[in-house]
Length: 171
Length: 150
Figure (tube, rainbow over the protein chains, first blue to last red):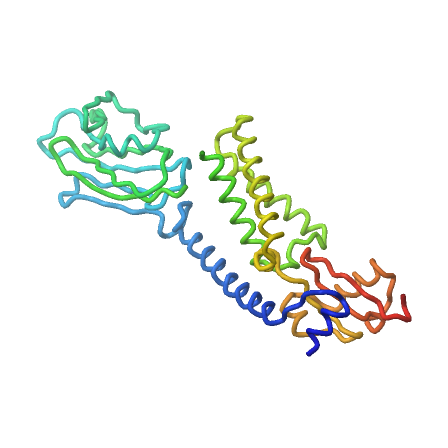
């Protein structure tokens, strides 16, 4: 009954049972923090890690995209698109991105720069010249997401394949 | 709205993290602990203000945190239970010259920590001169010497 004695002598509320509970909770919480860190290192919270990149492509290999599955709010990230015109294609490649998806981020830069940008109610269309390529072009968009939450994006080639993908944006 | 949310979230997360790390952690025992605290505040600042460096935003964040702090202190005053959960309890770690090893281990304290506090606060030299050592909620160790060494 040492606890009672403490209270008398030191005028101190000591509760060993509660303290032991606290210690147990603290140790469980430490493990949880460690797991959180491991998940973070794997790329689950945006940033870089093995889980970062997702990719999608169509069957004919005309369009292939690489995107970040997990994104942090306002952090600049790349979005990579590799596109090829079909053999009967023309002088330029017309790539469209879903308008609704485009509203969720700002595009900081596009490499290479498109020749022309067109806007329709549903799509934003980028036109790239193909003159000095073998018909394949690699495009990188650097974007910053403006809204947290789950996003679904669609990109496609005019008259060609469409790809759909999702991203999660952390606040 | 966003500034208020940011302030509230950071306040709660920090409160939780520091509670998890225990009474003793980061109680400025060493210079490095102090530096660590500064670095943490620097990292927090970014998340608090976001991209908005306006005076309004800063004021909103500060008001949010101060108000939360006042609110919590009022709540703690009314309910000892809440105080216990948020701040923990003081714990006796040495009794009549005998260190209570299991409690000290759980709180990551060793005899040298108690001796350091004994020297600093009471000018004592040995463990057996101490009647009680208490780990306070602040993370500091308070020392009560035996009668004959007072």
